[in-house]
Image (cartoon, rainbow, N blue to C red; front, side, top):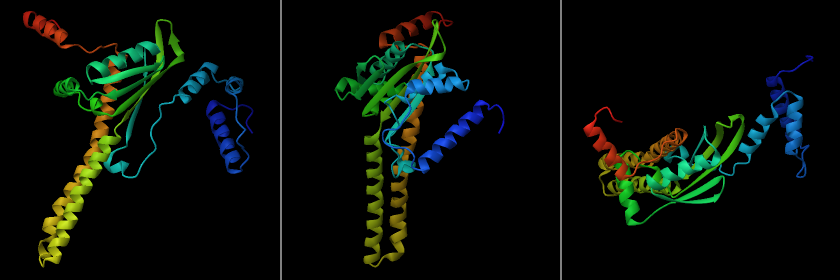
Length: 270
């Protein structure tokens, strides 16, 4: 065995040892490693203890991706999760997220702790009108989610007093939209199969494919739009975090009107 092991060697050996222990049934319900012991062990092999602390903080995030379901590849997953490092403090990051969710996407937000935010879709008439306006501006999908959770943890490694680092994780629930697309696609497909069967039993078997196939294909296509919607939702959540990371805040109608007026007077003004 080599006299010294690099970090890749350590990671590989420890991972293999854990697999061997698991397969051998050597663990029990009461076994485990205390976080401080893990930090000390990592320090012994030359790993920055602050990096381990950061990793432990991320591991403790309660916002997680939902379990995979059947038909996810067709209609997209029931929840969309994004994670990003932003150069902000935890409170500032959540303040920025809340500003975009309430002003642009018309969600109602609840700050349940210093590091977490819960949001739900507003259903009042003004929110519906506001989402329509936001849709015209290119913000379509986030405001349609049934619920959304955001959580943030501070990072130690790489942070400075003037440039803090925070890991933000957001999960959006699109189970309702997924169900609607699967139900709609299924209904169209069943209608196609029924129409084809009816044509056969009525003595028009030659017409069955002509009648049934377009509906079956249409049903599949309708269900598959759910996957595209999930992809667009993920992209919009990433864009939201980009706005937050840059310190950008949404402008109200008055702010946009003032900016347009200034631009009309001075074209160089942005």
